[in-house]
Length: 81
Length: 153
Image 1 (cartoon, rainbow over the protein chains, first blue to last red):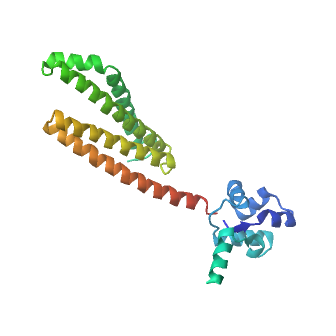
Image 2: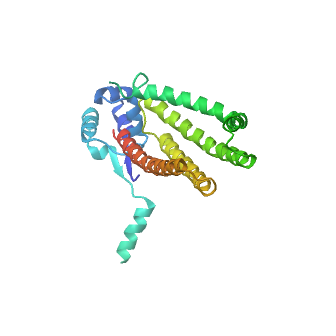
Image 3: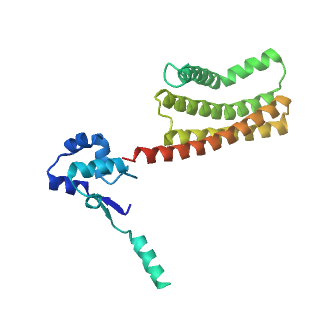
């Protein structure tokens, strides 16, 4: 998955624990763990809004796009054409 | 009326299927004696037919037990209210393969010892096997959707 969730970085910056964040955004610790470990397949806007509100940040601070090696190959192929 | 759950219709069906499984297992293990008893009481079959029938009933009986056992597993997950899992997809595929193998055995029986009932049973197992195959794919799609839903935070 080329979308990386940098939630733990932002949590460390704000000095907030997983259980405290889970309680603030009203999701289970298990779901927060799925999100932190990049196992999630999708994030609801409502969850993203709650996280941004709790951590006082922007979605871009939490989510990052890192292209796969196959994506880079495809892009270079297109440029070649 | 409660359909799913231990006290629902699926729970009652699970109990009946359990009885069928253990009864079937008993008959399967006692086949040489029970078939001999059947032949002696009906006086209908010779020794050749006895050996053919014994092999045929062992083959079809084994796969029938596989089908019933897989159904038990599926009903167990229904009782736990969690039917959409990959184990059930695999169970349905095993049921489909077993049903089609049984129908193949019945096709052989049609060639050697044809009766009207044999043709009907063959058709039932062919249709049942194909339905189980389609159902397994439906369950597979459902599992994919459920996983997607479970991993949406």
